[in-house]
Image (cartoon, rainbow, N blue to C red; front, side, top):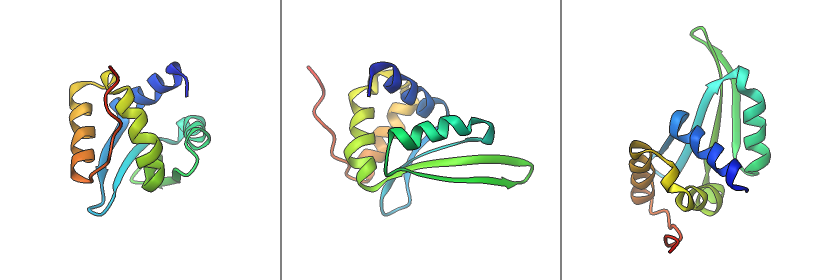
Length: 112
């Protein structure tokens, strides 16, 4: 993934994403309005093995939800975020680090 795409992805996670888990495994979630379907399709192409749910329509809202879990998260998404963690704002960095700590997500050593 090029720097521009990585920066775009981290911007999405900073503004709209969630770093967490279900109590058993970590997950990164992105939920946005259905008008962003092309963006979600890009995520599916860029991160094979991730899952796209929806579209959902309820409560006057229509949205998709993209999720990375399992090997996709541990081997691709988390290392990518860790390499570019400096692009996250402080609250997103804290959420990412807490997810990694809570679920023992191994990260590559910081670049020197």
